[in-house]
Image 1 (cartoon, helix red, strand yellow):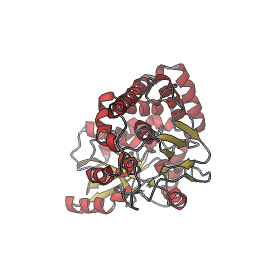
Image 2 (cartoon, one colour):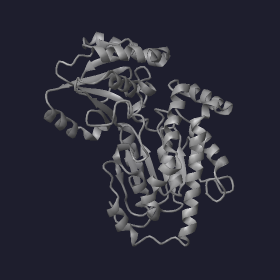
Image 3 (cartoon, one colour):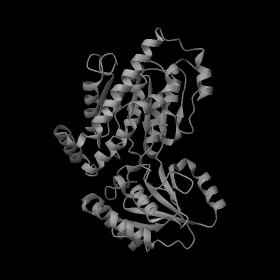
Image 4 (cartoon, one colour):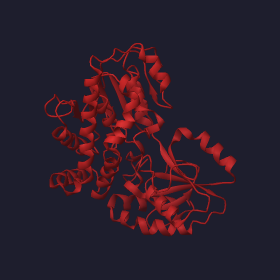
Length: 409
């Protein structure tokens, strides 16, 4: 990040009034902190109850509990102190009022909120292409932000709206951020490759166990696996376990904690379908009654199934994870994110490890091709232009619907 800042610093015009810019940023932070407080108690708002029913109507996996869980996680991050500390290193280098298009997925509720936050908090304009699976939640929250934002923040009703949403095509943008599956990623590369872009591929998460986990650890792991019906890229879909690992305790907890998921008809259909395939194909599996455990080298598992793979020693495990790092969003357990915290990322836990704010900083002035390059998937090419793309359904990340029984792919 320091290298990026030094490279761009000479070409960035200084603020006409740094003190005023500081006050505006403080007001933006105040606005998002207010939205965070609303998110923490949104479940008691009758108006939001109506929005949640509409969201469930188009996406059966957006149950009330899952929507409120997503908002609660964001409420914990949208605290003034956390926001100020996070944005502070970038403030001097951020561009102003570029139109940033964001193509959002719809696998879990408000999954595009981090990009929305980065764009608006940095003082840019947001153009969001909504997923057909999540068309209601973020526009409603944005309307709340507008209502509570202080005057002079550039986010409130005293200013032109800095965000617009569409379910059609995005157009007239300066740069684009998009998340897609394997197929949609190739589509994004074709249409957006000539513009400054940050493109993310489909990833999933794994957990590493050593057989010494406590009951509390395993309970946390169950949450990492089952939350949001397992549809998030930070949900664990693959377990690495030592040879001769005993699945009894984990299976029992998955049965207890996953029973509620079986009340969801589409999830239950996926469970039945996957079980039938395992039986027909003579694939050995462990049936917990709510999800299926099967041995596989694949990293991403279908809905209602969890893959596992044995490892012999720490060295071979580390080499395996190193070779497959591009497939992983996060690693849970030994050597990674604590059990039970996979779906509680911090503000600086960027998707695919690509710093979104650094990408926005790279747009602040013309620069040679390749000035910005994240850990993966992001590239700054030439000057910000004015782009557009045809209508296409958004990439849904890990939760992209399959043609099997409506599950993750």
